[in-house]
Length: 288
Image 1 (cartoon, rainbow, N blue to C red):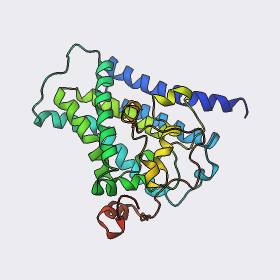
Image 2: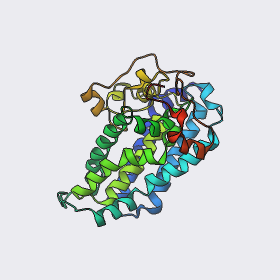
Image 3: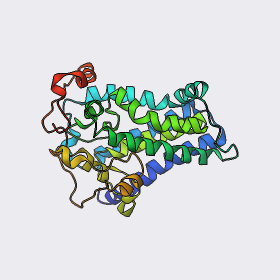
């Protein structure tokens, strides 16, 4: 379908992500309930990403099961459960933390979502970078890097403790500042769709906007098999933090099949064995 190819390549992200993010911001602005609408909008967008991979894959080899689909479904269920529970987690944190009440009460709901999102995104970037520098944090995070193909479900292939470590500082700071739990939950729903695109086995590009949003053509460099080459592009959604820190990287010749995963460390294939792996002797050191 030659006429469809440029539509998918240049239009997939702005159409699918843009529409879902717009709907999620409209939901919170219009006062509609978070449940079930946020989950339904995000799930529909993620499903479209999965279907588009079949229409226009970046790597045909990554369409095939690598013995990882079943376990990735379990990781996805747990990780997405944590993401969509963030509104309840933020509400619970708000009830026990000493709130500083610095959040302007007159802000439109959509603006609160975006500001809370910037705080959370910076926290995710900082903790992501720390997870590549400190031994035990890396062992928790290595599960995410163990994937030997990149596709829509990889964004949720995370150790639950790593997911909490990554998100907790930014969310906690937003809560302390007085961000509404609904703003935090809505931002995390938006991120869930972006993560599907960020790891998608989809031939798409943002052109010059790749220097603003950390999508797949940027993030694939972060999954290079050689550990020393993967210390780039830590951004979750925005590339600002990497550009400021000098950790942004992009080349025209992208990462291909056989170039992602862990170089020497070997991850078990079963779910609970993967969760136990960070405490095992085989976890190794940072550079393995």
